[in-house]
Image: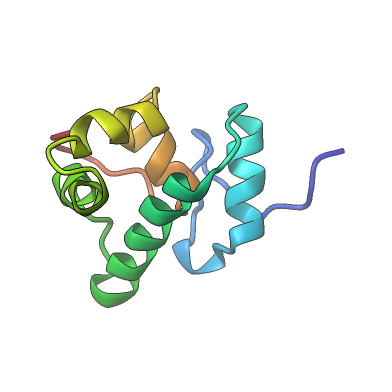
Length: 106
């Protein structure tokens, strides 16, 4: 049974990032057949903190650097292990970001 979700756009991104909760993230991940572990949450929470500060989703390079702190020199590899369909397609969607118009994936 699917949970009630805040409004999503046609591609499955939250229309309003402030509607995001950890329960919303869990449900969005479930819909993509992704089970969130500690490293997923570390990236998602990093993204949310950055969004709260600047109202903009952090670029993938910033998330990679964040993971480098845990996995020196392996941030890029680890990010794409965690979100195999891509930073924008999975991480941004699950973290409640709006769909970026143009994006560097790192």
